[in-house]
Length: 250
Image (cartoon, rainbow, N blue to C red; front, side, top):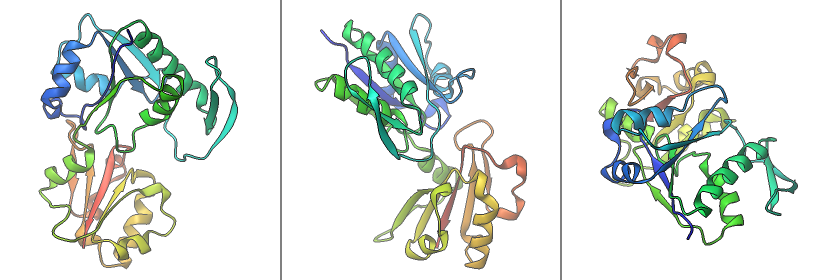
């Protein structure tokens, strides 16, 4: 009998934001797969779960999930299962390794929980592994457990609504935006993810559009180091990091 795979969103950082369902499943499953952005680093998702639940005795599978900026892909041969491999920025081997490790556990009848920061359906690299898992085992049981995203946590921390009535919302990775001005003109609310590398460029555009006073910058929402800035000129270099976003409400 094949085990069941649970994909669990553990929220943005605060362990008290895990759902009751997530906590129950984490207590029940014997094996937990945790993603890491660096091979030598630690898993943030695991550290969040450990603050909420005693994971002693659980088998922990570590999976190296490099961060990527594009879904451009190309076929690159076949893997050990005879499935065509899709290379995304040359990282297919890492995702194949993660998929193989998960499948081996599931085929032995062991249930596995795969942890993701925030919500597993919003910019989650799990879906690169998902493609591989369902190709090898189309009947695999996969259950998604939603989590609180950094978007929701940021709006709550800042005490702001994201939309009302028929207002339009855009959620975009800031580094992908070629012409941010058009997006800002078209939507009532714009949420820009991962703004740390283009912060100055975005701030200049907001100033030009007279939207800088309608923008909130949130760093590390839901974590101990959470910071909220309602004046972008107060943001210093040390306040810029990967876990950051902007909410622009016109």
